[in-house]
Amino acid sequence: MYWLLLVPIGLVLLYLGLAILTDGRYFGKGLVYRLYDTFGPEIFDIAGESDRWRRLGAMLNLRGDERILDVGTAIGDLPISLAAQPGFRGQAVGVDWAARMVAAAAERARRHHVADRVRFQVADVRDGLPFAAGEFDVVFCLGLLETLPHAEEVLADLRRVLKPGGVLVVSLYRGWAALTAALSYAWYEEHLSALGFRDLRTAPCRRGQDVIIARL
Image (tube, rainbow, N blue to C red):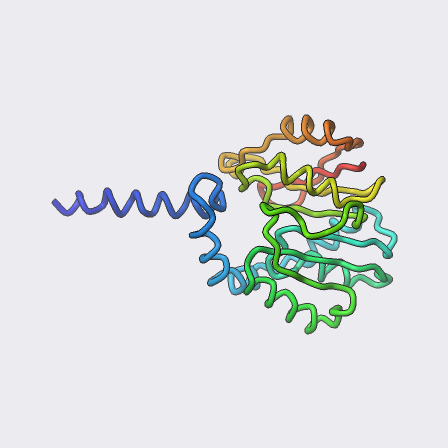
């Protein structure tokens, strides 16, 4: 009879796993928000990826004076890594929906002595980005669009805050990781082209994940 107890336990674990993998695309955002806000800063602090972000920045041939936006910044590893590069004199902004993530990101910026070039704020991309049209030269959105129920609306908002000639960088999952990601290259190609992006290209980012780099 004990095996009967495993059924509801298994269903609960499946629910939690899918909710985390999709950030609530199907199950609502309340649970995942609480998980990220409670445990996110500690989890993301373990997996620092500064070298990866510096390589990605090098691929973009940044001049150093750009205004950069990172949507879904977590603890700010990406904008902090770019702002810490020699010669960077622009401004980087990171937004995340979890207040503890944003607080941890701001503290990390102070520790890395880039607080004058990086700022962070709480914002839920589902409610629209709190920035003016054409405010940024480069926008990153990695590991986030795939988790949202209306990704095409968010993609349009990412395009809105980009300057003409600006660059958008989004994630593209491959292999087994693509099983939990709803967005294929064909989806990106269709929607990015409709929004006026051109020169789409892919580049490796991490295991199971590439990036798509698109220019307006």
